[in-house]
Length: 276
Ligand SMILES: [Zn+2]
Image 1 (cartoon, rainbow, N blue to C red):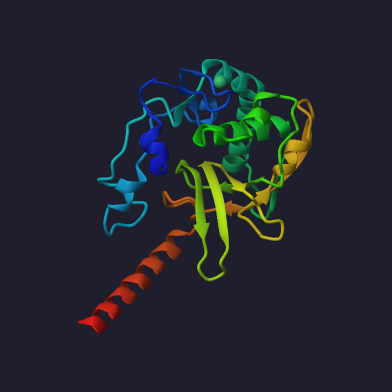
Image 2 (cartoon, rainbow, N blue to C red):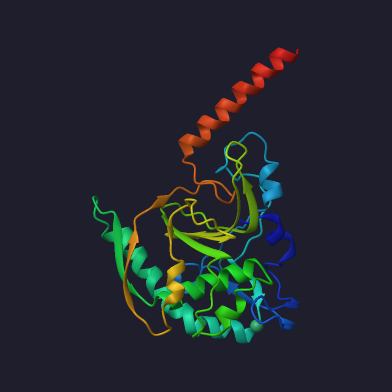
């Protein structure tokens, strides 16, 4: 699932001429699998448009019958990178990232102890981090962290401007959304967030993060301090979020969504009765 900016502006099916999301070169763009193909993203998917999704009436958010979609045979992703950048990120970060995701998949499916609150894994943190950054560049063309991705040794990631949060999910929806604003009327808080979620993990790239505010999941921005060849045993807190709708930053459970729909229906009914 993706928001309309991605759905309409980035042709999903055909090769096309455009600007590479990493180096900026104008050329015939190649397909970047998001998440990487061998991490499980190789089956046919049906991305849906947010506009069509919102028009679908009173059905529940996970009921996609009748919603406009594209049949994407090769898996989820976008024509976003030139062939050089696609090969570079695949070789430098993708191969390592795929191993990590496969290991996390295996732990999730086969050996997750009931009482655990963390998953430990030996990874190359900088490679892991740069693979995710590459995906965020693909869905947000022109993003300034592209230069950080294109230099495998670079540790220049501006933490005052960006922060990366990670979480786990057990839902099978792939969701990616380019930067959008999320406001809270009650608290006045406004967040600018881009998101990529694909089982068993999800990430939020936060623009202009506020140090004192809590964000979804756990902070992995410090992965950018590692060197390219640093291997570390990382403890991932087992924070599992539910992903049941197309909307970015929405981690409500199905029960919470149903309760909210019922509440708003009741409110509407009461209001109408008041007016009529
Ligand atoms: Zn390029």
